[in-house]
Amino acid sequence: QVQLVESGGGLVQAGGSLRLSCAASGRPFSNHYMGWFRQAPGKEREFVAGIRWSSSSTYYADSVKGRFTISRDNAKNTVYLRMNSLTPEDTALYYCGARSIPGSSNWYLTPSEYDYWGRGTEVTVSS
Image (tube, rainbow, N blue to C red):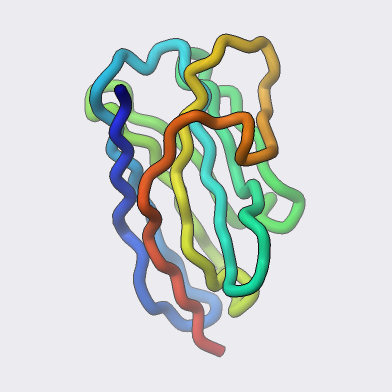
């Protein structure tokens, strides 16, 4: 069993920054793929960024490329999402997902490809 707990969300002005954290526990994560998704009111959950735990290979949605950075800390079993130059369009509930099913891809873009989820942390960007 895997537990994921997100933190770090909040209210920030446009142009500001936040760092989200996803603390993982319950199983070794060396073979997992971790992803950040977000869901705005009335919209579907969308992929933001992903990282392969073992190699640190990363992948980003075009909408956040160059502004967001995903990273992981092995010692803390934690995945981070650094978000810079935030805009009101980034306002959403941000979720951390873990994929434990083996695979060779460097990206998994749909929620159905992940088998564990946290409860989310809310990010609100004011204009």
